[in-house]
Image (cartoon, rainbow, N blue to C red; front, side, top):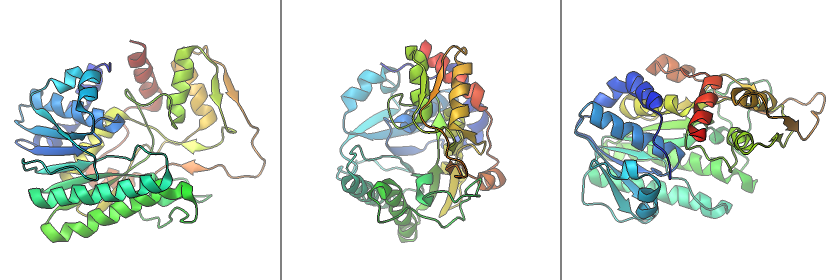
Length: 340
């Protein structure tokens, strides 16, 4: 059973997203992907703000298994302003209710590249059809930094204006290509019914609800610490990543939903790059400094390390967003929550 988010994290979101959340007074939100990492943060921060600010708003979450979510998060499922709509994102029946705002964050559960691609594209088309039927005003699509493909050597921070892309001849590019196609559908659909679409190109994050046994290095490192194992770095440790705490992520996503520019993409993440080796050591230190760090491979001299670090100047300049919770503190907060 999932624990509630820390009170300090909920207070942090409410403090810095209050003006944006106030714009949702009386709103009716429809959310896909509401049971995942991002989704749980959006659901809980919305419900908290709805109570504290008396917004009179409501949220409907699309899910294939409402019973499972209710068992996992009873503190959320019991809130009267939250309801569930059953169905698959590709084929769900349209609810009778109308919606003012839509957040589309569903991702394919399959690891098969073609099925994952088709699910993403067909699901996005279905959500856009719902938006048309509802005369929704705003849609936030949760995309990914994977749309840029590999970050070129020498580019320390990838901006939204970079026109790189995944290699269409590699099946491993399916996730990034699916997000690119879905972005296009969102923007192409906007003129048809005055729907304003905003794209959030999300990078890497840390915080409660992050899976500890998936393809997220920082989650795997925390799992090692909690299990009393040495922290295992599978590569050579030179790859650069950056991590935004999920409380800051929530602030960003509420801002994008409410006031992001129509038809515009925004990188979402931290611009403070760190090598995977340094990240492993930071996790060990934040957890008490007792875990050994083991790096599997030796760096190859002269080879530029891969990077996956965004430029966030657009979000900073246009929306006043930034990194408020530093990485060390974010790791400490997450580990404390996991240890409770």
